[in-house]
Amino acid sequence: MCQVDEDYNGQLDRDEVLSFSKKCVKCKEATAVLVIRAGDMFCSGCFKEYFVHKFRAMLGKNRIIFPGERVLLAVSGGPSSCSMLNQVQEGLSQNAHKKLRFIPGIVYIDEGGALGLSVEERQRTVDELQSMFKATGFPYHILPLEEVFDLPSSVLEESSPSSEQPDITYKAAVDHFIQTNRNCYLSPEKQADLTGLNIQESHTHSLQQIFGSIKTLTAKEDLLQTLRQHLLVHTARSKGYSKLMLGDNCTRLAVKLLASISLGRGAQLAIDTGFSDLRYGDIITVRPMRDYSAKEVSFYNHMYNVPSVFIPTLDTKTTDKASVLRLTESFVTKLQAHFPSTVSTIYRLVGIINLLYMYICEWFSMFIVCVCVGGGLGLVVYKQGGIVCGQKSLEKHLYCYSCLRLTSFL
Amino acid sequence: MAAPIALRLQFGGGAELLFDGVKEHQVTLPSQSEPWDMKQLLVWIQRNLLKERPELFVQGDSVRPGILVLINDADWELMGELEYQLQDQDNVVFISTLHGG
Image 1 (spheres, rainbow over the protein chains, first blue to last red):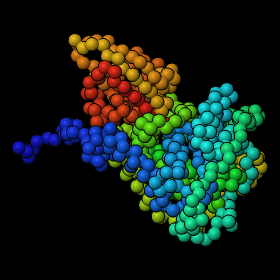
Image 2: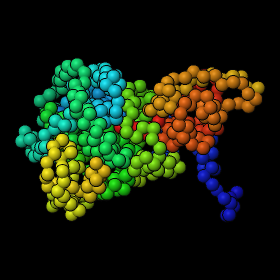
Image 3: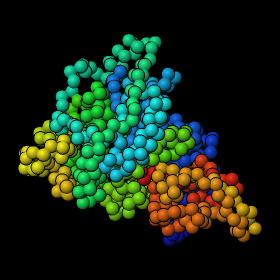
C-alpha cells in the first residue's frame, strides 16, 4: 500500500514502463520498436505511416505550395534533407495516397572550399551524391560555394514576386489543377547533364582566406550559413523556382532558436525557425521537416534504407565549447536525454513569436547581410562592405546588431 | 560461464569518424563468467575499437546524448538501455544524430 512519505524516484516509473508488454500505442498489436517523446511507442509499420503522414499533412495544412509549382530542395547530404528528398519522391509517386503535386529540383552546395577539403575529397562526395540524385529522376544542380563570388548584389534585396502567380486561393488552385490534369501525372523534368564541379582556384583561395581570417568558430559558422543561404536563394531565382525547401529538423531548429537569442538575433527568430520564410519576396523558403525530431529522422532512415552521405562540416569533432552553436546543441541534447519534452517546448515558442512578428515587419527597413526586417536596432555603418558580393567599396550599409558584431571578427 | 558472443556493430551519422571511418564491425566478445550487458560492451568498445576522442562517444557510463542506439532494429530504451543482456548474433547500431540536416 502507498505510504504518505515514501520516496518515489524516477527509477520506479522507468521500471514500470519496461515491465509492461511493449505494444505499439497505435495498433496495440505489434511490438513497439521506437520511443518518441515521452512514452509514445510505435511499431515499425505504424511509425512509417506516422512519418509519411506528417510530411503530407505539413504541406497540406500550410497550403503554401501550389500545384504545378517548381520547388527547389536544398539537400546537404545529411539525414534530414535526404529524408525530405525521400518523402518528396514517395509523395510524387503514382500510387501515393494524397499525392504531392509540385515539380521538384535538387540543389547541393559543396562547401569544401571553406572547410579546406582537397579537390579529390570534394569530387568524391559529389560523385556519391550525384548517383543518389540521379536515382531520384529529378533535375539536380551541384554548385561549389565559390560561386558566391559571382552573385549579383541584387541577392541582398527583396524582390517582388513574379507577376505570373495569379491571385487565387489554394483550394481553387488545387481544384483547377485536378480538373485539367485528371488522367496524367506531372512528368519529371529532364535531368541536367553534369560533368563535375567547376571550381575556380582563385575563388577557392579567396574563400579560404576569408574563413582563415575569422577568429572565432561562431563567426565562421554564421558566415557559412549566410553565404549558403544567399547562394541557395540565387539558384532558386536564376533557375526559375518559386519555393525553396530546407531540411531543418525540430531538434536543429530548437538549438538554432536558443543560439540565435545568444547571438543577438532575437528579432529574426520567427523567420529563421518558422515554417515559411518570406524575407526574399519572390522566393519563399519552407521547412517541411520542422516537426520531426533528429531521432525520428535517423531511425526512419536506418529502417527504410534512406541513403545519406555524411559530410564533415566546420564543427565536426570540435569540443562542446568550440562555438555558441555547439554549446547550445550540447546543452539541448543533454537536457533532452533526461527531459524528453525539452525540444518540443522550445519549439513551440516559435509559433508564438511568429504571430507577433507578422505585425511588426511592415514598418522597418531591411538589414543588408541577413536580409531580415528588424526593429529599431539597425545601425547604419560606413564599412568597407560587400563581403558577400566580393566587392570592396565604401558603402553605407544597414546591419542588424548580430551581423554587425559578427562582421567585427572579419 | 557464458560462451563468446559474436556481434555485428554498425556506426552511422558521423560516429564512424571515431572508428577510422569503418561503419561495420563484426566482433566477438570473449567468454566471461557473467553475461555481457550493454554497459560492459561500451567499455569494451572504448578499449578496443574507439580510435580517438572518447568523449565524443561515451559520457560516463552511457553513450553521449545525441547518439541513437538500436539493438536488433529496436530502440534501446525499450530493451533496458544499459542493463540489456547481449545475446549471440545481436546487431547493435550507433547513429549520431548530432549532425546533418
